[in-house]
Length: 232
Image: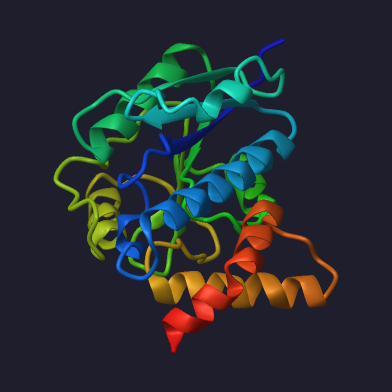
């Protein structure tokens, strides 16, 4: 039976030289690709762990690398398919329209750049009653966007890929008098300093007895010496 909420993971097809490119001056292409595959594994497991929702994966470009073939047919995922649209805003708008048209009452989108994102933040987004929910990230964007009931038009003119994404979106929210719920601040991992912070964070959680993003933590352990050498 279909649930009332749709949880959508926006991901990139893991192709060499096309993912996490801002890490490539710091790490070689093959290492970056394997790291992103670890991010994906943790992100997929995370959405599968959220109860009471239907789970979808939207991939850009259309998945051809073969990575997602092992997940196709997984009963925890309702669909793995291509994103549609010319830029991120258009692709998100299309996704919201698709799932609202299918009858979902709440649609929540997350990215694959925050493997340590607490599941509770996603669950908070589904509990929020406002028309729009945003999860602010420390780089000036957002790690999550959720809408209730209908599409809130907040994407036009947003400068995607800059540090002004959240601020520009909030301007549109205020101009349109849209009810807003803000989640706690979290972080994406795009740059070397963010990757080093992620490793420090995951190591601290592990010492405290909390296992978070296990695939990413395992891979970071494998390349620990490389990270030290590059940092030095």
